[in-house]
Length: 118
Image (cartoon, rainbow, N blue to C red; front, side):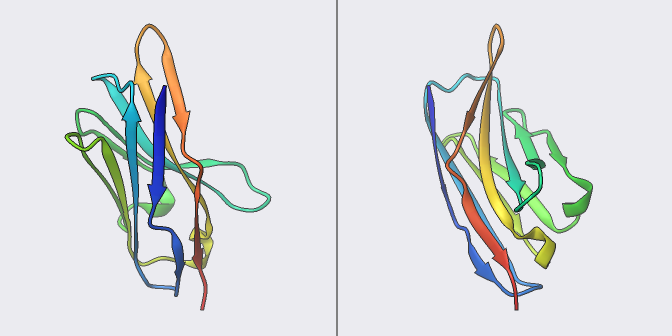
């Protein structure tokens, strides 16, 4: 099992910045991916950004150039730096950890609210 603890959500004005953190603990495989997803009211959950244990990153087109994902493998922590925030970024943001073993093992955080509003 892997436990995920998220922090850093909140309310910010358009154009502002927030930094999300997600710390993982438990049975973490050496090959894994950590990522951030978001779900706005009435919409499906979508990938925001992900990063592999080797450092490869992937971003949704809607956040490219504004968001940066990074990780500290020593701390098993992933970060999402969100700049130039827009009202359409408002959502609950979820951290996801995937262990790569004989199959994929997915774990989710509890979610943190991000609200962009003037």
